[in-house]
Length: 157
Image 1 (cartoon, rainbow, N blue to C red):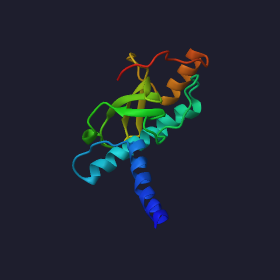
Image 2: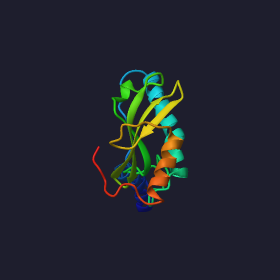
Image 3: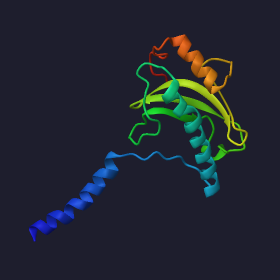
């Protein structure tokens, strides 16, 4: 009887510990599922067309990591939209920043402007006024840094 009680008590404790020690990345999108689907399409497009290319091609010391890893704090390249999630749509131009997260500390990498329906993506360095294609920006950063870390300290968003 004691053994049975211990086994049944462990299951809820493990479930509670799992929820307590993990976090869930959530974005509040009010309204229909359509808005959430639109947000997800734009987010996925950015991950595929920008963040994954950064992981594969951008030569920044100490900045390799898979985007979207499940963790309490994000790891890798992560897009952050500069507009409310309800406004993120595939037919609109969407602005934001991409940061490289190591633990909970973001390092700003670039600003982006994207329109999924038009297959339009441009990026620029923080503080710059010149937009360029993802490939051109990666090539410029790789030449400029000569395989060294671009950003020395975390910045606030």
